[in-house]
Length: 81
Image 1: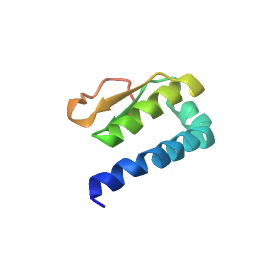
Image 2: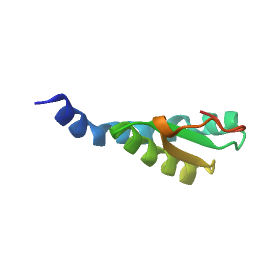
Image 3: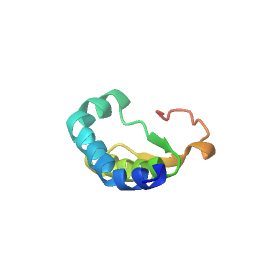
Image 4: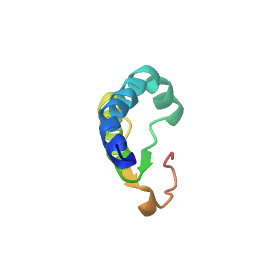
């Protein structure tokens, strides 16, 4: 099996793990952020995971979040990254 195939097949488990961590630790993170927007960076499959995490984080924690391709990221004042 190629590295790409392993990466693709691991994506559902990684998304579940990421979403579980948001549930476990999201209150603490949201309190540290003090309502500031969050950006999730990634490329390829990690961008897809970041997009899912950003959407879920925003829905569950009420903190603005967005996924951005790492190559497209521009630091924004007030955003946590």
